[in-house]
Image 1 (tube, protein in one colour):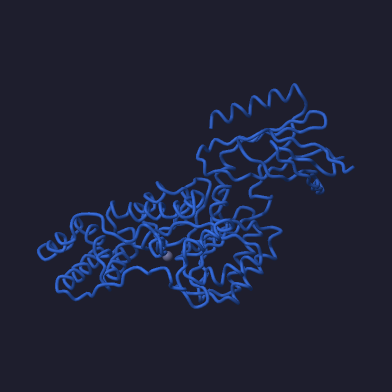
Image 2 (cartoon, protein in one colour):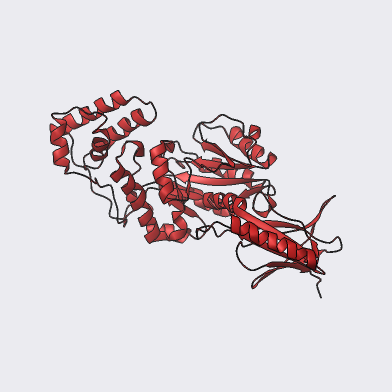
Length: 438
Ligand SMILES: [Zn+2]
């Protein structure tokens, strides 16, 4: 932070000698919009791509898909137990009941043994532990699962698909979409992370990232959603060590983070930004969904993060194609005030803006602007939107940064006369000058 401030101050003083200081601010949202909307989809079920993507394409909307990488044919990593030999663990369960010391190891192992029905036991034990905080009942459920296992009552599960199943998306198809959509991690196998031990928790987060990196590239390793919207602190902390942004929790102090279960009105928050997560499920009324959009457009600090699961009959609590068309059309009618962007782009914008300093000065017919940010991570490469007051006589402006030149119309309001444009932090000085067509 210190260095960025020093640069800003130096420019400010030198500008006093050269000319007058011009007024520049970084707008709250990109393109000077009043609010942001991100469309997010969980679990990577097929109709998200076959049905929802064409609808979003018709409006030019980007979106973010949280994908379960172990389900995709050609992935290097699938569900695997990392730890002591399963045989040893199973033998111990005959003598020692499940307790706080062996719970995580047993919960981890039971889901990866390759039998039909064992995974379901872990999911249920995970829910008891993570949501209902009923540890005793979770331990007893694992005892039941291991007893059945020792008695040979589970049958082996089918191996992973070959890639010819039309109901499973492929990496090739995702790569084609990766230029206009964001892909993000939803772990390798969609477990209840809260009941995994450290080794298996790490595997689920890291190996999912690795498959995404190898198939889709670095850009798609920014975001994560730990399954079941968990707020388990250990899981979310582990996720945030490996990803920049989690939908489960955003710890930034200038952000009010309202999850899907929160009933707080975002308008009552006094934070700089409100991340307002809402789930659009089968039973969610369209009128309610539209009211979220209205509220976001009415405030100036709300980021509406919409969470979809199933689409047109496939996946959890699906929405129909007709509902999506209606809803996205409604959002589209508000794009004068709303910035529709991927989950990562909005997260980046909020952080880049907070860490940026901007200074500008006018010398004759040129305004120069220096935009600095002290976010060193290479992921933070999104241009910020600047708003600079320009002389009353200007009608059009030439904006130049490095070898990029654009021409824009001056925005005139009752009490301001300004240029609204995009600038890249930590790059060349931006210059604005009056532009007149020849
Ligand atoms: Zn999920």
